[in-house]
Length: 314
Image (cartoon, rainbow, N blue to C red; front, side, top):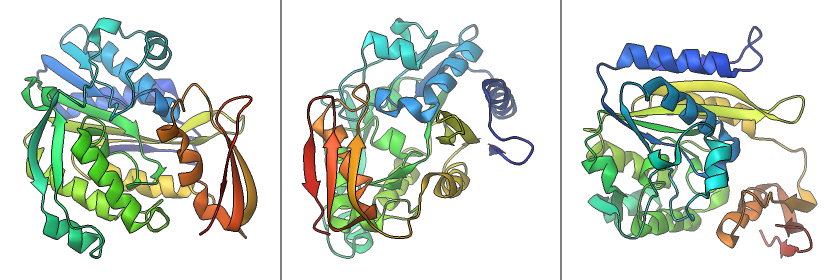
């Protein structure tokens, strides 16, 4: 594993340091590579820094390998040409593959129902299918790079790592069942935690069915800088859980705000470029509810001229 974290001598990690980090990791870990698959998030994770990293990876490999980019859409809609240009500057559109979660997934196996029941304390007792886009398995790639941000998440506890592959390039069964598992177990019990029932299911799926793949993770930890813009505080690269665990620890320090008392009323504005559906807009509730007082009010404003109100009953 290779790691780079901010400290007193490095308040932020800039683009030059990021490229140097990527080049060092790839040179140390890899031999000859002819076919590369990059799995970044989609536009709903625009601020993750994964777009810039994907563009840098393309520049590193484009003269010596075939490079394909498969944004991990999950069940989100495909990215537009404008979104591709904004998030992945310099990467030609013909290098992108659209994840078709209805028709282009292959089931590798399943997480047994008995384990799901054990991890969920009996709340859920069905098996969860382990599915990925068939190109991940059948594409003949010498290297697969999963790129993304580790950040508190309402369904899995801490986003990214193997979630980017098994959910981001997964099918309807994996996505729906894993999300219901998280909802049944309770978002308040998982947000910001590393060890959760959903993470255990994903770890099982990776260990059983993805270990033979040339899969490496490149993970960021990001937070707001003094000017209000997003800055990179940590970079991690490696295989399996190795890069995820230290990234999650740093994200817990950088991305969780602890309050002295609950909030009674909150207005949440959702950037219309990123949050285009109710599925995504509900993050205004998911990621605010733990801070709300009983009977508190969340006013969700997804776009100018409209508002949705949710009263907390927790």
